[in-house]
Image (cartoon, rainbow, N blue to C red):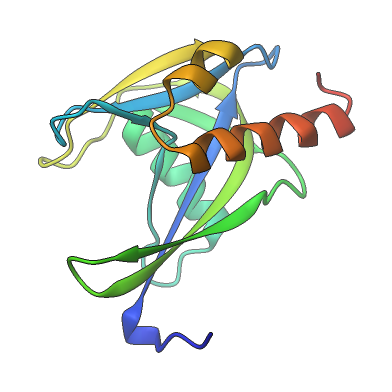
Length: 147
């Protein structure tokens, strides 16, 4: 399907693991009233690469500086935004935490950060697509010999 450029929102994010690949970084969105649990992501800035956007969004939303693993683009999620009648594409990567700093949230964002075990995250993630993404990332890490 062809999507006119004006109708597309491009976002990027990452599933970030600790150095031992035992814990995964999640965000809890308190602003939606449901405490939705997901992975950090956000819209690309003009002229920004998807990799740079993923790293920036992880840092802004969680305070964690991450390194994206080589060849770790896991997939592109397609969502229809009914409120704006636009299509959102989210590019997902796998990363590892390098350093932790302070969150840089926008005034409207009400997010908290939670490191979870793999099993805990799988149970807690709010969307089935997030659980599927986590499983893809784990398979990728196994092929890389990281787990």
